[in-house]
Amino acid sequence: MSITPGWPAVPPDSPVPKATEPHNPLYGLLLLASLAFAVTAVAYAVLPVWEEQARDAGRPLSPSPFLEAIRAHGTQWLLIELAAMIVFGLASMGLDRLRSLRKERLGAVDAEGKRA
Image 1 (cartoon, rainbow, N blue to C red):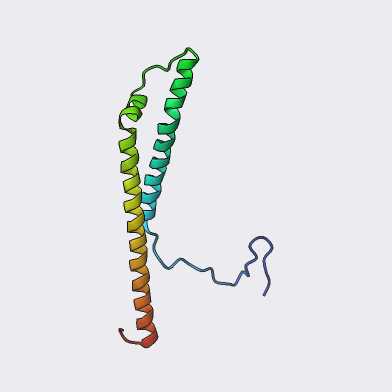
Image 2: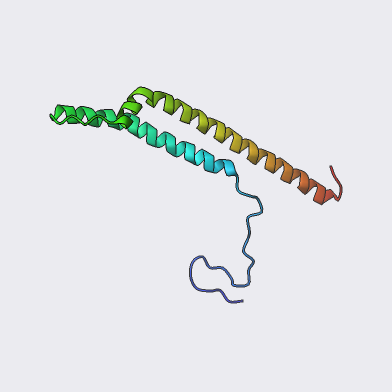
């Protein structure tokens, strides 16, 4: 058996392990909710500071609907996004737990040759 050069060193005749479990779709939703939370939190913290610095420099920012929306509803957006992160996080952990229990149950069936 020869080993091909490069990284990682894998013999050419070795089987490549394949993922046997399907991907959890809730991870994608959790990622999107977390990204939205991060962007909103940065905007909520940074935009008022930039506005104040521009005012102090004598060049106030022109009125912006986004800035007004952040000022009026930023806290609500953050709370909603935080709730979505909690819901998607708990749901993804629950789905993973259900899948692992099902896998254990099927493993017990295979080991014993009958349903446990």
